[in-house]
Amino acid sequence: MSFPLVLSGIHALALLAVVVAAAAGSGFRILRLLGVRDADRETVWAGMALGLGVLSLGTMALGMLGILKTWPVAALLAGLILWGWPGLKAASAALRGSDRLPLPVLAIGLLGLALLGICLMPPHQYDSLVYHLSLPETYVLEGRLVSPQHLLYSHFPQNAEMLFSLALVLKSDVLAQMFMWLSTALCLAWVFDAGRRELGEGPALVALGLCATHTALMLLATITYVEPLVMLWTCAAVLSSWRWVAGAGKEGESWLWVSAVFSGLALGTKYTGGATAALLALVPFWRAL
Image (tube, rainbow, N blue to C red):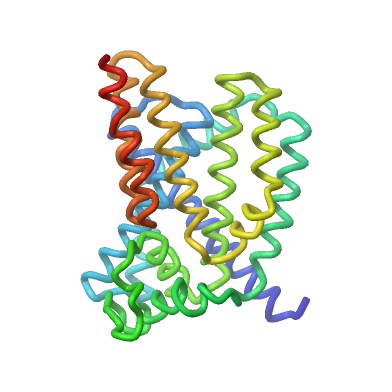
């Protein structure tokens, strides 16, 4: 491994830590504003997933204002960390107070670290170079949102591209790939914890193992394709909807609002996310029967 690659990786990992702090704290606080009072690990994953949406929409706002530059992005991250500091402390406390993880989960965690190492390789996939990173690069060079005539995809949903733009503003295409790794990790963590709560540890471990070792999932977790982000927000919408169905009273109703937000974020990433949103829209009618 070359020395410049090591420096690029250290830079990206430091930025990833900042992004996680900004997403976790702000997302957890927004959950509280929506009425969610749970303090378990699933709520932490929900907050981080929601925080990624905040980062995406915040970056889009900077682009619309024509200030998609380094200092405004740094101010966005710093502001979210400061505003979300109480939420970050609450999320940290929830993780510290949770049950110990079984050994197979730790083994899958090692696989996740290996995939994080693969993220250090420079982006080279066709779609990444001609669309997923090319369009954000244009935004960053212009300092604002534009519609290049040579790129039809500029009219497609842009939530993932906004996260890629944030990474490129901070001079790290590796961070853009780490966003997809983080999305995959959050989705798998939530699937495991939800499965353990509903079905027990055994079925949850089977579900986690099947997902984590799927070759397509491992590939997509290390590149700048949008599917991991769609997977995260779609899964988050379904699991939040389930918590609403299984819950009771005002606390349960809060998860319905969270599910709606995640459905919108998924649809704003790829049109296929609308299929899940349409199905979940039928759940309140089904429950009323």
